[in-house]
Amino acid sequence: MTRAVTAPRAFDLGREHGWEPLRVEGALPADLRGTLYRNGPRRFSDTNAAHWFDGVGGVAAVRLGGGRAEGAVRLVSTPEVDADRRGRPRYGAFAAKAAWDKRLAVLFGRRGFKNLANINVLAWQGRLFALYEALNPLELHPETLASLGESTLGGALRNGFQAHPHRVPERRATYALGMNIGPGPRCTLDLVELPDQGPARRLTTLPLDGVREVHDFAVTERHAVIVVPPLSAPAWKVALHGTFAATVTWDEAAGCEVIVVPLDAPARARRFKTDAFFAWHWANGWELGDGRIGLDVVRYEPWTGPWLPPESVVSGGFPPLAAPPGTRPTLWRATVDPARERFELGPLWEAARCEFPSVAPSQVGARHAATWLASASADGGPTRDWFDRIARVDAETGEATLFDPGAGRFVGEPVLVERAGGGVWALVMVDEPAARRTHLAIWDGERPGEPVARCFFDQRLPPDLHGTFVAAA
Ligand SMILES: [Fe+2]
Image (cartoon, rainbow, N blue to C red; front, side, top):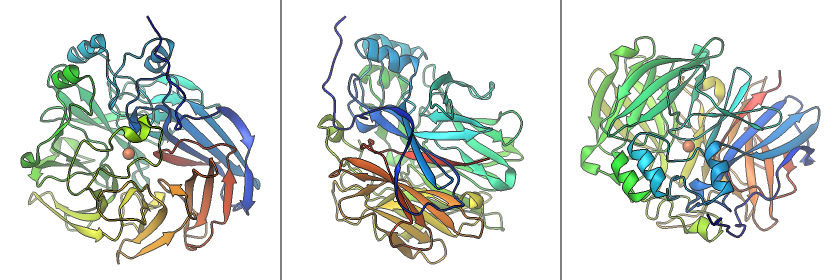
């Protein structure tokens, strides 16, 4: 077997390391103590990566406290990632093509795709997990970031876990989706509850109309709301094409299915159809008090898949596309009336393309004050411009306040940490392509000027996707 060795790509993480002091500019807030964990695709060489999403996951962490900042970064290790690295890559991924034996495995409901663990992190009951899509979470050591193996969370998960759990403080529990694909055309979605204390459990299993991509959902204090887009990838087609990206089709006429699950009576889910739209990420959901549910979402218009063409990674270029050519993700608000089976959607903030929404952790599942997003200052149709502003959009007025990281710098998802006296710290990883370095910017959520502090890694970390903050005990 020949080993497919590729030259290091510009996107590759240069160096893995344990905790090292980070150079700090400004003053670290005394009340900000804990660890920020960020995950994203960080290694592309020696793989069959054909797209940004195909990179091997790498968790970067910044530990804050006592006036100091320390950083660590480590790539994940899973059996498929390691097997691919040892020999000719055979496992499939988003656009990475599976070898024929792995395609056959997909057809028979076995693993033909690799767990890249490159999308998000979950902190739960003192444990840390790197999350992927439709495969189980990879447990990491919270101190060393070493990979400890896939977990079923005590048997609550079957063969899949989606990348966007949501902790609802009112319920003292985190809710997540598990995707079970195959064998054959079967696909079900598990709604899983991860309480702050005690074992995880499956609340319900929802059969889907074929293999669908459901990246994220919203949870209120009483309901989970899952919108299933008409984005399908049957296993036989995945086996034929060998990748998800080459397989997936959008059926506009089929519309979206809206599934509203009462968390305390999950067998009584309401399901109905609405017009087709696509969203990766839901900002939040909340009860309106009259049986209806409010939802904020980053909505794509129109669907023009396949999204995020691969050349940005193959060429090693940056930034990757912030959106599919011709699409414009913006912040919208939905009102769901499960009793009348109605779903109404209207724009909330359309001034700029945006993604990676988040709200203050204490407000998840309830009426939130503001949605924070990464947004793009350049606009106008097809564009390659990555996100270069953080936007705080007032949930009542739709007015935006912009936080500027500086010229030629790019940002991703803001992670919010609440302050004892009210307000938030916004933690944002800032990519500086020209300086070939990455820093963590910490903004006072009420002051859109300069960040109060910047913590510099001594290298450029490949841009990431999602993360979380774990407060110090
Ligand atoms: Fe995501």
